[in-house]
Image (tube, rainbow over all chains, first blue to last red; front, side):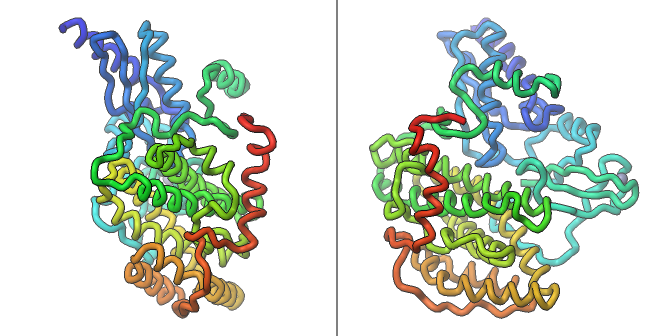
Length: 169
Length: 275
Ligand SMILES: [Zn+2]
């Protein structure tokens, strides 16, 4: 029993350290997509992952990376499960994940909208995202979509640097 | 991983059948999800619903992808491609669910690549040719508003897989709708030329709105959003002029078959190909 618990803790540490393929400064645990790791009585490791977006092309790569790292760590039987419910929210990005994003010049998300209908905002008064480099609030959105679905493109008028911003979802 | 060797590293790290690029035979996107159809859910009906929703998404994604290299600005190309990718992701999950529910065990490739135009159940608005950027904006506004309103109801569907796909989709569709609404206001309230093109685009989608309302009764929600946006854009609400025929019954325009020829060509010529 104790061995199984220790083994689960060890397997979890291995899986938690796998970097995200699209935001490699974050681990899958930082991003909040690793939903659980269990080692069964027969030694099978079951790791559960949830996609950030339905079309996230990195999902297959994440699954393969977690399985490969666990096998390297000596677990022969590895099963990766997909969890769709509850859906991923940017609120699951950890504090350390947010710090790492900022350090890499990417603005972390604000709080995600809470349940219920998603309101349409047509006024130009959406709250500004603070610049991750200089902290200025004098910023503007240049594109709602960036290189990946989870990010938008912004520009800082104070330091004149463009930056990416992880969207609230 | 050094950037010079990124492709080599990927190739080495993925000798198993898990791939991240293009082609057929992807790993089941519902891999490891409990696929039991709950008691009290009509499996055939569930499968048909999933196929219709997936077809709307796949055909829309294909039209959005046509904007790559053709959008007015790089940012818009990236945005339209990302929106298409979200929809493609929704389609993959829904096709996979359909194959489990209808008992045929068909995978996503079978639905996307191996059916003919008459087997597709997408609404006709999704298949109309790409048009100009104003038309792309208006079509996306209408389809994302309609799909979002329907998905908000599907969140309570008795099938937990469809409910979960909807809950995830709601978040994505809200961004799609916001993107389209922003452009609709910018173009409608822009130059004389952009305003004229927006009016033409609204006239063009009007006959296809009736089909949307027959498919899912979310007329009030859709009308409410369209009114907000057209008001802010200084445009008139589109007037419904219902057309005969329905994509939901497999009755399509002449535009769907060529789209499918392009979408399915490689997969049909080289069965099981990966690229
Ligand atoms: Zn700055």
